[in-house]
Image (tube, rainbow, N blue to C red; front, side):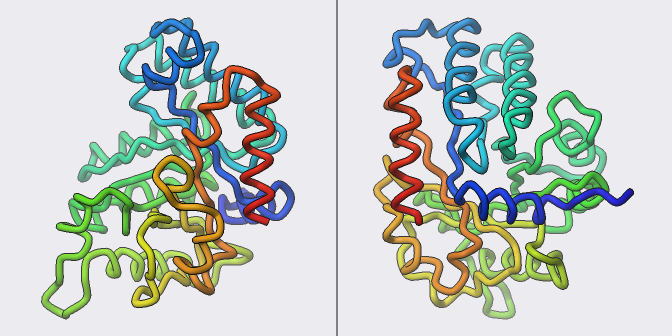
Length: 274
């Protein structure tokens, strides 16, 4: 039997549940705001609360791996459980690990998150292409093999990103546009949606000079705490807006630990996105 692609699963989840992606970012200040200790126990209670509250309604969860890794092996064990529980509830999981390396090292990162039998297997993984797009080939290949996807950093919302992403190549095209072009090639002919997406900040304003129609998803951080709103998305993404996966983290998470308040906050963002 053929494996269903990430793009196909994502399109269905977005159509059925709406496009909202909720981050799971258990940093110390949020744990404190929730009245939880900055310990593995607090980490576990935070993550389980978010998944229990939202796992049956949101399309995508995006756990930030760093906030789990800081607790060592016990934190990674919580991350494994969080991924399994989120996927068990019917949500897709995009692991926000921003991995990027070359050769066998990139292949090992890919195996950790994109191999079906890995305890950290996720529907998609964020990756950095700034050792050259070709360095991502082990992840691209394993994602295809296992029905997973990638979100490649292309036009990020952090102000420092511009010094790399806006740099001009010899052919006059900038680096961010080059990454989008590579992704369009990966997704050529895919239906109903390609599996290889880009990270494009919702705070960047007019992006009409970029071809965002890559036939793949566009993960859009920056909504909520960073200042962007759902109403900004058509202006930023134009005709590609249907494929945007808007990411909200603090805008939802700050309403915890009440499961009812988390659901209400996520529902409000979902309504605005509709």
